[in-house]
Length: 498
Image 1 (cartoon, rainbow, N blue to C red):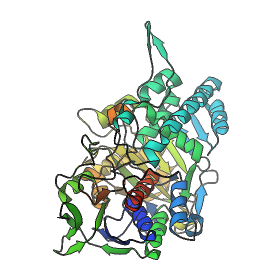
Image 2 (image 1 turned 180 degrees about the vertical axis):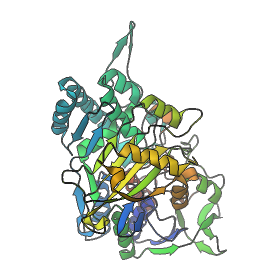
Image 3 (image 1 turned 45 degrees about the vertical axis):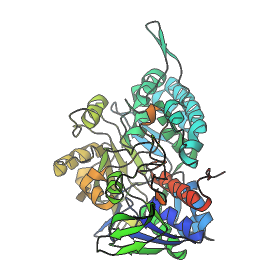
Image 4 (image 1 turned 120 degrees about the horizontal axis):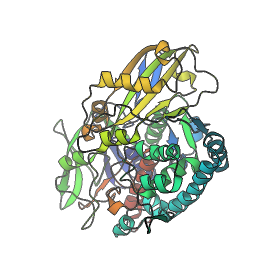
């Protein structure tokens, strides 16, 4: 039985802690803030409650597995999972509106046929078939196994089976998500639908590899889910599972260094001057924080995957509205920008900045727990912004509210008040520089969107969470916890779930 110190109480760290504790280890979590959950936070004001991090859960099987492996009570006995249907509604610049059903390829194709026409629906259906092949080729190495020592194979191999495109006597295949949209989908609305899945993670579709086709495929194949009471309830359930497995928690305990002894990680130095000795250390922190804690530590092996830095962030506007949620309202609506090229150039161009007309995601949960009474509604509006951007946030929030008005009739007339959550708020809660939000790992693109392995060059030090393999997103965080626990319990020969 080893003593294991975990830095941070984000979802990946909590998942690792619960699994390690049930394996018989003594686990203690040291979190610099006063609560658990990482980005899964909640704001409560005057009877309204808002999620400030991820608002939906893809791939709930990851957390079902966590609860199955760590106790008697399954996930559904600890939280109420609700399948969101429609999975999403899309409002396009030309006024077209399409609602996509949950976990139904045939239903999605039918909805697109009604909204965009038979040809567009057929092309999207064919795309999903190719996306499934990309998923089948990349699922295990990118999500279920420790990062391969020869990770360069993943960096060089494009799993998406692109359709050859002939132009000016040349034949090419799509290498980026933008090229998939332009060459295979050939409808600006379908392109916007495809690219919105990358943009939601702060990825530039012009540079994101075609392998990102797995992102819309995951939603169509495995569904989109909500946790009744707000997504913060998922963090609460995982935290309570850790307590039930006798994980110790120390809040307000900031780690300022990793102790080393005989060439191994041997515990933590804390900001109050105390020391927490341990046999192993698991760090669920952003790259810049890890640099300060363990100087010079790199991913295991020569030529390891470098840490991602400078990712995009989010601006979130929390809207308290008078008037109840109308029947038939979609839980999630994506309002697409009228000028995608300008939006991408603002977000990812050399100058950087805030798009004048951003794409926004509007979340309107059907959940009485979030409002003071049936005569009110809690709405969350989110848009991607550059990490480290400084606003002016109040003025830009008005831009998001205007865009959201295309999805919420009489939005301004119903508005009681609003609150703005900025990249600085994310940085304060997660420690990520500039409030950066990690993207999931993707194959190809020279490994640019892979994340460092969960083992490091310092024996006894492991990394977990969105900034390490397999990257960002709630399911990926849970998977990282499973991988770290496997590496510690079974050793370096661990090859992932079977």
